[in-house]
Length: 248
Image (tube, rainbow, N blue to C red; front, side, top):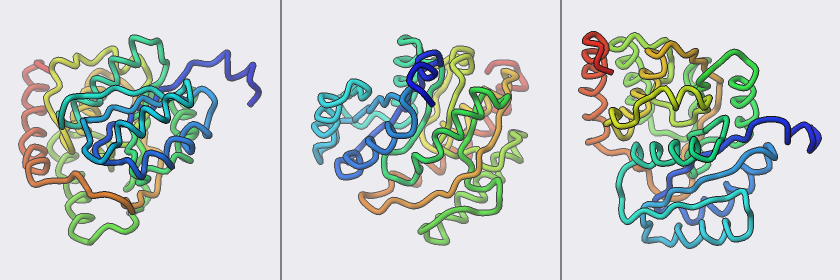
């Protein structure tokens, strides 16, 4: 695509929360930016003790397409994404991505997901691990089964027409984010992903799943915890009840 063609199309923001991702950040950001000249990255770092914030500042100093927000502590994935969504809306981005910084989400899928929302009749494109079988590499069987059946559970409770409602790799059309009242979103990990999907779906937006291959991180540690799982178990019922009562 020529530079003039890119200039005539809306910009896209990749929101990337980080905590102890200094090693991964140095390598993932150039790969993201290489996918499309309209892509920019917003790194939201929660005071990582491993120096991730300093790495992010260095990347931003060397590239005007990289931006950084520093928070004072580990405040949660959900609040980081909501902050990033607000930042992107205020600056006029037409599309906003969620993406992990640990290489589990391959940047090569960004153009396909953007195309699905930009001209493919989709309002929210979800990078799905389960829409074409099970496409997960390097997860222990216990983690894989937890994720797989958590999605079945979420689909059963909420009615969401998705195979992978807990995916954290997404592309939102701006209008979707503008229609959701962020002040009412109270979830964090697994549950945050389900809640954003559910709210978008209940607003009448079109959701689609783009097949991806998910590869577990090679550096650093997973942020999954028992508290995140427990939140997802009860939060889906709360979402269903609020929907029935028209209080979403």
